[in-house]
Length: 381
Image (cartoon, rainbow, N blue to C red):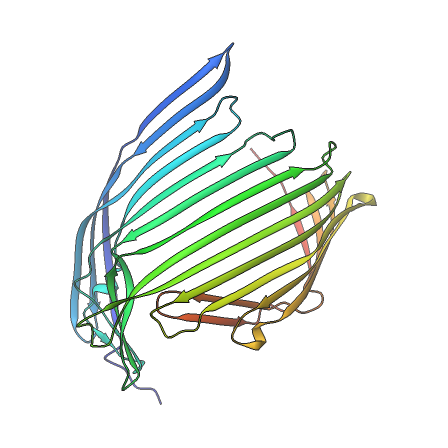
């Protein structure tokens, strides 16, 4: 027998008006010889300043109108340099952006539908800032006619970010959640892509992607109903590597894939155990051209997970997919027969962690199936 919960029920409507001014300053310099471009330098400055006018009408346990008028900044400085020979490319970019809390975060109401997790609003929230620094290198042309290299570095620093922090009462076990401005959140990544053609006929190819992804989450933790607060910090580091070794001949291909990822999360402030999760996979994939323009492709891969608290999530999944297709080039029609998860082993495991908690999720995915598809590619001017 359900009854109306007046405290936690509401309707709302919001309105937003956005006036913006965009400016662009571009600088270009090129060196040439005998009509051929040897190097080039480009600078782009795009200062964008906007004016937002927003209001939210809240109709619930009390009536409120939240009105916010503020300038919004989203500006970037981008430098691009093609080194002599126009082959390697360097770029450096800096961006700054305003972080604005959601209007519902300002609503001064106590939501207690879950008595152990009470949610408050915070009318005193302020804007924050996000600073993004990004750099990259692209070889553009193969070194020794064999190797392509691409490196990307990125760092994000956030000031005054809105974080859902909480106050904990150890005698009752009640957590009271409240959005608050916090300094110190940052994250970034380093990504290295390599593509190597081993032989002169470009049949044997090695591709590799290496990625490092550190995160520094900061929230606030209180034990006296937010009279005083201390920072709760979680450091998360993910390192992954994906490799593919492939051999192609005519229109046929066979490849071996292997990948490994390690995610670690540690905290000196929260009563959670450190997390050290490994995920790795390996397997074969292939494509074969058959008579009558029929193509057969298949992949067989083992997915493994280790380090989860639940033993049910530390498992191995052998996944086999296959496809048979026939294309009628003259008419642009393709007939495709797909077999997905032929062995029936697919399932999805995920986890997330921030400055307050860690969540593991175990989800059953769509069961295995066979699908017949008809595809028509056409174009008309």
